[in-house]
Length: 187
Image 1 (cartoon, one colour):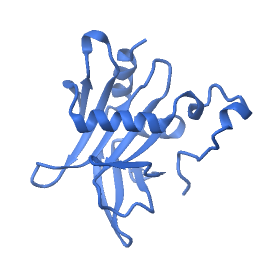
Image 2: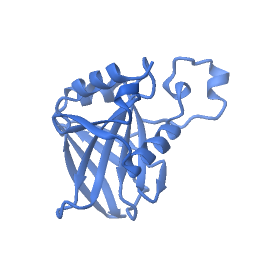
Image 3: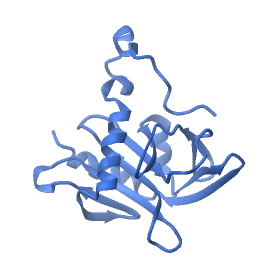
Image 4: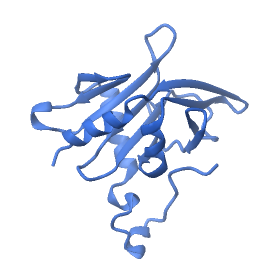
């Protein structure tokens, strides 16, 4: 299974003139850093819920970009063990996803997401900071289609080299979440 975020050389955008290519439109690592800071700082307030998704806007009056977050908590309910954040960085741009996991896991295999026990995607962990490790990915093409049609995402991470752990997230109403984020994207 190949990662859904292909590695590209630093001069890819200049040499191929792929202006519409998502990889040239905005650097995914920048979104990860900004998203992680927003998640870890707790900036923003929950404006509403759409199914299992919490919609958070930094300044709804200013139409600042909003994000949708779904969290999975430890059994005691105190610690977030997984967070899936979806945001639209700019109007008319594809959405981006950031999957955040705790520090201390085995990162070499990456993270696997399986939608409705059928479609499998692999994410590469791109950065770790005190709030956890984060894998960013563009939400477009078959990833977008799978999320919009799906009901459940199984997330597989590894705690050690030979010990995967799977946790599930409800992804119902994802299409509605994307539509709401697009409407609130700042022009």
